[in-house]
Image 1 (cartoon, rainbow, N blue to C red):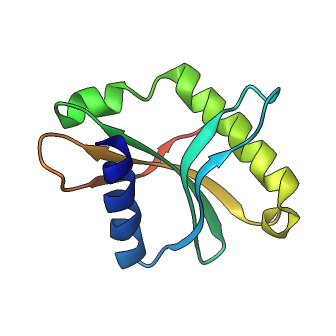
Image 2 (cartoon, rainbow, N blue to C red):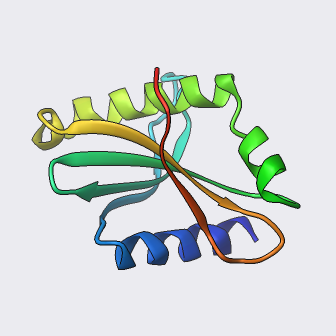
Length: 113
């Protein structure tokens, strides 16, 4: 259900005017960063999206821990360093949450580091 939720979230964001840049981006070994579910662009903003599907929206939101946020920030740094075309873009971290239904709940600027 996780990969299906990512696909639904991606489609939802495309409908909202976002352009996909990368899906399931893996930074590589030794970075301590791991994977970013979705990376999208809208105007001059590069958006790193964490997708969570749990029993309800509250538990989905709680699944994005401080440690998870820090890991995503490191992954975003690696992505921008390895893709210099995006170095002058604004960076934002969003969340797509799913509860019992498969209707996405988009939280813009879900956290800052």
